[in-house]
Length: 436
Ligand code: UDX
Image 1 (cartoon, rainbow, N blue to C red):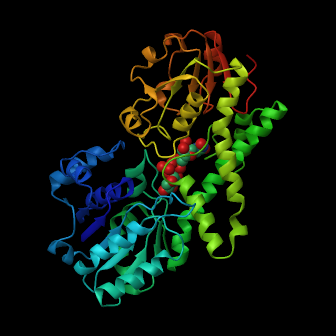
Image 2: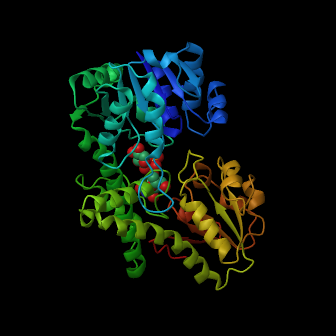
């Protein structure tokens, strides 16, 4: 089937490649020329395991083409996926949906009455209805619009797209449902994936509700870390014990410096803002606390460092990790970058290492010194902070580091405590008393 995918960021690029892998004929639309040229040349503008190879594969197969804007070819497409970003507004907690409305304006002249516009971006509930009314006005016919939220995680984006836990279809008419079912048929038939059909507002809510739940789970365990710190408990053992209760589940109970990235933080804030507009702000007021717990964990690293040294003035600190999670070079709202900045503001001489994200770091946080050689970066450091749980750090032999003082703060609770302690290190963990 011929499809357009509008907006080729993390979500759109992954979705476009996934659709092409399923055998559809995909036209990717991306206004940013640099990003577009990279993709057309078979290069991803970001790091994402396996997606790089899949991109080259679908280009070779001729299943995908890239354009800066729509042309006559878009008129033959049976569906148009909206995958543009909905970042947090600078002025408030709310999501900026303006890119969606611009995308609709650009698309309207190229839409046929039988084609379906399918929203995938994360939106405040009610956005789809506004988009539909605008689209119908612009196109002059009753446009088909559906919502089909995406749950992919960075680091496993292609796998999540091709083998999702479920496919959510927010539809208002049979034609849209039929087209969506045809598009996803290869996945459903090979993976037996559950397809959940619902009204559009519910489908818009599914995504923000899922992300709010995940953020709450992480903040819950980090709140337990705070309690453990005050009471001498061990949050890692606590998480293991409660996670074995199937009703709770062990996923998303990893304590540490908390969640970041382009989704969880902005989605819980956007949800609060939308609920306020709907007059039901108190229903999700608790998310304000989840946000605060999350941000407090970042500050906790600074407090622990200051507790250790008194003043951080001129102390060399190695921060291991910049990306918001491993296997990604995404720095959006990264707890690691926030921690590095905070330590620097307290006078420390911070050096950041990351296996993948240092080029980006130079752009988004040029004030931070970085070094791509971990061992060299560790030279004369008086404190090491693990901020992103890359495999390289988990498997690191602590004897290799050339530090002046062997103290490490494990901001993700992933280091082998015995190994580091045997190598003569003082290991400080979040929410754990590791008895140095
Ligand atoms: C998230 C959702 O998981 C995904 O379904 C949605 O489509 C987009 O948002 P992503 O942002 O890629 O995906 O990362 P995720 O794996 O959810 O991690 C988010 C943040 O939470 C990271 O900073 C991660 O380090 C942190 N995290 C995750 C924890 O601190 N503890 C955990 O137990 C899990």
